Length: 468
Image (tube, rainbow, N blue to C red; front, side):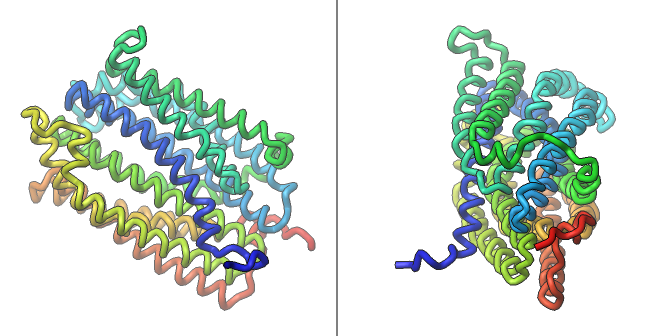
């Protein structure tokens, strides 16, 4: 029996943060999977249009949300440093940043049709995708100001269990509401594609309001996060760390988005196959993203506490857990790839046969790159927890756009591999980025071993360390 006086193991601490986040994120991702399955019932064209629209919307949201992650790093470091008074001002400025991010987000989504035309997408897709996206635009404020900020702050405060309690319920509500508005159940009108967009938007508002209400109802969280009195100096702090995080996330996410747009040029069956693989890999990525966020919190906490040996231990445990776990996930995808495709489209229907065949072949590549995807996500979290955001940004841009994008184009269009070639380029990029980040992490953590750990907020933001 373990001695209760001993501190919990780093693996236990990591999983205590990661497990609720992963389950909550999977539940949230299930909303997208549910939407795809329901739209698949309307045919491959509806699946392709709905998938492209939601991918575009959540791509823009995710890229901008990445900047908010800087607040989570700073809050976790403040906890490690034993400085709770810093948390409320950081939270307040994080809300200001989220509000400001709504403006470019709305501007980009409003021009969805123009962007698709510039990328030479078929006109048969442009109109429906633009209409779908314009409905989703109403969900931008809750996605950024509400859910976006809460999902960053709660894990940094070790209160991630709230996400687990809310998001599974939200996923169920989203599925029921989508089915009702798509097919006209419970006396509601059958709106088809528009019904899916409306249901998703209403769900985003509901989830944000419930999360904010639950946070406000917890006295200890209310004490830490309020009053909302932003400090002007915190804007520079958040931008210094957040902008590189935004750029790195943009480099990665836009690679998937652009390859999806390229898949659209190969026809609706190819695009439907691409969206199936994207939906599967995005769902599995929720696990590694949760591990990466947990590693971020744990490393930032120990950085704040000026404990470099615990920083290294947290990093090793997180990377090892990601490699082991995602290796198992890759095996499952390989073994059940045909059944996974059948979950989205009935391959016995002649109109779906091409999409099912392409998706089954591409899922083989998805199974292979799971380990690299998990490793790079966790390594990014480790480095950001140390305040190292600029170099990972450079490595991400180089790997995704210097290697992945050219290779995907060459394989897909010059070697005639189509969607399988696009995913081959993505897989190669993930492997290259993971290797480069591993080298950077070894160097950064080794440097910390040779030198005394600097107080993190002095290191990251330029603020003086708090006196003992």
